[in-house]
Length: 86
Image (cartoon, rainbow, N blue to C red; front, side, top):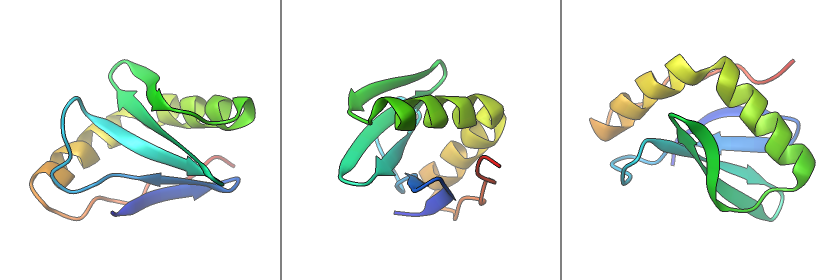
């Protein structure tokens, strides 16, 4: 489960060979959510309101990089790190 980013206590991970549609996992404390990449939206699980806002903002800023990393993990190649929010 490669971790591609971390910010404000939130871990962003993509799993090798994971199911479609393209997505990532956001983990914030005990909460976890699945976030689709295009369109960017939380589709499964739960994050507190602050975590949801931060994750969606971050994903909007890095959508192209997320799409690229999705392709990499589908080919079982290591994804690139993506900077977190400042």
